[in-house]
Length: 623
Image 1 (cartoon, rainbow, N blue to C red):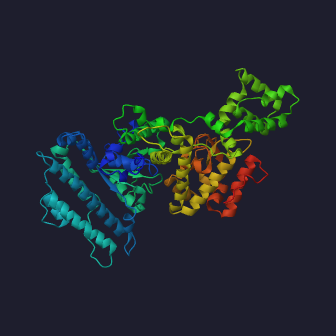
Image 2: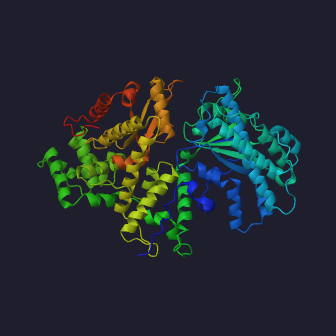
Image 3: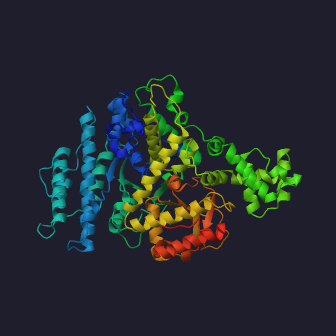
């Protein structure tokens, strides 16, 4: 068997190298995001923020043009922006604190570092542009100003300017690591050197009418005072535009260095949430992402059969009827009928319609409805009308309970719930494209173990897809322990909430089918709980949305829904659809988050018991 070429094996933008542009997929909602106003792009890890910024950076755009054999002059003329990527390295930016220096000194030093580092990156772009141009090169016309600022009379061109800048950067880094032993470097006012350089080059013909954008990625890693420094540059673009990429809740402050100013949308920046694409836009995006990856497979590169470039050919559609067939055999179906006969009796012919049904969903639904307290006579009347195609309550009952019944049937028959099909994978990925890629990677890997090849493509089976979903879901749950600062507490809370939803999926009455998110009174939570939930959102363990059925119209009700990220759904064996919510009191949510394990478990079990009325302890949660 030939070596398998898994098109989904690389999922991080940073790992795509010089060919990143070949993987980039756009969406109509991305058009016009980069303009003469700052952009704050937010979303969980893997939602596409870094991909977006790296793709729009100068060097990647240049590589793309070179791959298309575009003349450089034509390329540079078409560019409306010059984009430069800067990653707020979590191993580096925290170094600018403590060590015996006052906060005011660190503000000055970090602002100086940004000045130096970002100017260096801008100079690298300018030098590359000049090296690529034969005529109309950018002139270095700020030699005297720069020489004065950097106290270096050897600066005569962009190359010597860059050399001097690098020297100053090394001195600064040496100082911050040895503040007690080294001489403090001379600092430059926030953004001054960078903006001076930028003004000089965009006033020249080659870059006239273009804007310079710095993409500050992983903004959540910056300390609060460091964000104030960048916020100041966002507030006063002169002329450099600063765009931000961050996780949810990554903006620690809206303040600037001026006590009287803050940044706010839409005046100072445009906010855009990568996790809040519409269902259609997200579907379009992941289809494009998958097509680009599949088209790189050597056997598919020149295929005349375009269906092989469509991920839907491989993972197909989920069909609940197929899953039911795998759960139920004739013996199991007869057991359902026996249960119904015992409930309604076999001597009343008017009720026989309830247990003579041929549809598994209807048979199990009848038991659910009886458990809810519906009268057998009423159900028989409605079912007869349904069978005759007349208006019947069964239309709504089936619609509202069908998927919940499949989860219940899987549990009762000790079968693994299926997680397969394009729409299922789309839901499980929870709006984060990297999760979809990871699901596909694992699914193709499972298929390969069972003989799949791209020389002879075939659909991936339900079993192969389900095993992939469970595998990805498990390691995502295990990853939670690495999410500082709450880590262990966050994993415990996730397990408690996930198991509450799991037990409610097993409720024989299906009181509210497919519950997988909760709402609460945010204003009544403790400060610790609020910080905890912010951290959970930062890592996309939970996704916060405004409550859609908030009956409290008061101006300060401030209620939210917290959706357990659907990537965890296969781990708990619960639905990945956004259907129904569980209301949790703020006082009890505080205990679930901050209480000791026994108290937290007690609260979790009380919710399960109050809803299911289970007295058998079979639905008990025990961590």
